[in-house]
Structure formats: C-alpha cells, structure tokens
Length: 353
Ligand SMILES: Cc1ncc(COP(=O)(O)O)c(C=O)c1O
Image (cartoon, rainbow, N blue to C red; front, top):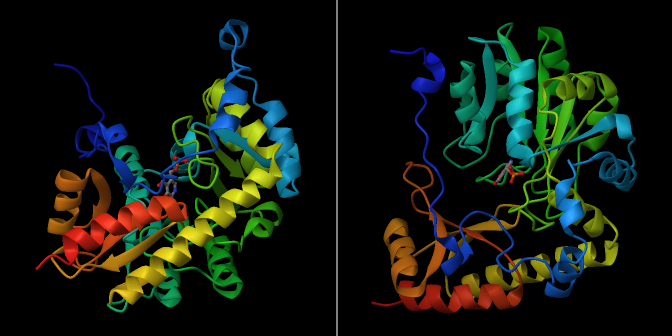
C-alpha cells in the first residue's frame, strides 16, 4: 500500500455537472450570455503561436488592476480563480486542527478546503428568518481561530455586513491572532466594498474574481488583495505560474474598456429588476440576493421544478437539499433577453396545474 494524506482521503467531493454547454445556464452565477462577441473576437486575434509559447507574465495585468482599484502592485496577486486564492489563504494562514469560522450555508469551497487541509470548520448557522447574527459570529471567534471568512454578499443567502460589524470582527480577530478573509466575488453587482480594510489593516485580505461580472469563468482568474506583507506570504505559497496568459490578456483588455464594464453592470441590473418584477406580478415570493442571483419560491416542489426545467426546457437552475433552502430555486441573472427565456419556461412549467 501507499501513503495517502488522511484529510484528502476522507474528503467527499461533488464536482459540477458536465455538458452544460447544451443548456441555458442559470445555475452557477455565470453570465448566461458572456461578453460581447466582437470584444472576444478582437482579444482572440492577439493569441498567436508565439503568445501561447511564452510562460504567463502577470505583472502588466497586476499593475493595471492595482491602478483600477486604487491600490498598488504590492497589494495584489493574480490566482487561478478565487478558488485557488481560497486554497492559498487557507494553506498560508490556517493551522491544522485549528478553527476556520464561516457562516453556513455559504460557498462550499471554504469547507471543502478545510476538509482537504485538516482545518477545523466552525459553521455559524443562519437564523430561521435567514438573517445572520454578528454576535454569534463574534462568539465563534476564540483563541483557536486562525481564519474568519465573510462573503459580502454571501452566496447563496445574500446577506451583507455593515462597516461596524466588520470592524467588530477585525477587532476580535486581532485579539486572537487570526486573519479575516472578505470574499467579494459579487462586487459590482453589490457596489459596497471593504477594500479599504484590506489595504490598511494588518490582518484583512480580500478576494475578487473575473468569473462573475467580468464573465470569463472559463479562463480562471481571481485576485487576492491585501497589505504587502500578506501578499508576500501568498506569493510564497503560490505556484510559480498560476494565472494563465489567456486569462491575464482577457482581463487586461476588459480593464481597457470601462464602458463595457459599465454596460455589463447596467445589463444585469436591468435583467434583475425585470425578473423580480415579473415574478412578483405572477404572485411569487422572491429574494434579491445582492449578487447576480435571486431566490424564487416556486408553486411546486423546487427540486421537481428544477428537474423539469432541465429535462423539458434544457434550462439549468440551482435547487437545494438542505432544510432552510429547500423551498427556493437560485436563479443566476443576466440580460433582460436571457431572463425572458428563463421566465417563459419557468411560468410554463410551474404554473401548469
Ligand atoms: C463567493 C464565491 N467565492 C468564490 C467563487 C469562485 O470563483 P472563481 O471562479 O474565481 O474560482 C464563487 C463562485 O461561485 C463564489 O460564489
């Protein structure tokens, strides 16, 4: 026999469904339609055989990105999706057997990486009315805590935190010697940011992704943002070549087009307002989850409606097994056109007697 790390051996993974290209996708908070075709074609023209032969060089992108967010090069590092950023942060600032505090439910890769790395996950449960008690988060932070994770807004339940709440968390983590990870995957859909804390505090680190508003989930690009000391540690932890050159090129060109970014924000906003209004008109209970996704309570059982949308309409949405969320479908939101396609199919399936 051979040695296998016991934490990896005992981790149960469920990987995303394959073959999703053939469906209309409202299940993973991607942009259902993607970036404008002309833009994508213009960037692809830059990808020559020579370009592909060269190892990725992230610095030009990092300088541009740092300027874009009002930070400097020493504050940022590019990673292979914020997924990889989560792994690096948990590897670097976690300690085997010690606590990582998150709310629950939340984005699964936090507890999956705890399991892989042998960190002790401390989930703080939502209240039955789907609010989260900051006092319960603060109570969960103890001498054993190494990392506290706050998603702002959270996925899937879109609660957000006030500056006052964050400051209390930062104060407590400083006392116990832990860091705070703030995941802003849904920034721009939700405009508030805690960036200033990541730049100015000694123990706060922020994650951003190019998979959501910037619509290049396929390329895999995330950015870890913090003070130079924390960024130095993350650079020590990272693979030499991590974010790939195609992702970096697309990201640079996206940043070159602020008007396209504005348009992406507007398009999603319009699509979301339209979707919520149409659902309300049809008598549905909805929840704006603050990112590019909403909850709707279908009239029929949520998992069955999701199944019918998939088999009869080739439409993917997210349903849940757990008690708190089982009455909801989570719907990723895109343009008004994309949402019209979803709503037509949804009403047809769910309003059928
Ligand atoms: C809160 C949150 N963080 C991180 C990610 C992962 O993003 P990426 O595609 O950058 O790995 C997601 C993806 O859904 C997410 O919801």
